[in-house]
Length: 111
Image (cartoon, rainbow, N blue to C red; front, side):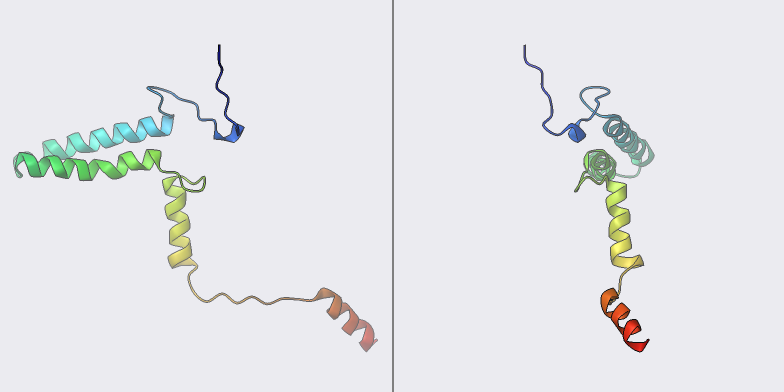
């Protein structure tokens, strides 16, 4: 009998259904719901082939959100960090060093 154990315990993910984590399962269900919703909403307007591609394109971001991980970040965390870096906190950053020992010597010399 062989028991699989992750080398790093932090990499453990509890599976809920079909080997998917709860996040992956919910995002997959949302993707299916999005595709079905798009199909029924646009079936009288567009042809079948176009509608099929539109369902795929509409459901893909939802499905990808459940499986996306980058440096331990989920999709929402990654997008928030990206927006902060490129828009909210963008700009020139200045770095000023302080030499505390030198400041103490200067105070002592003035005394």
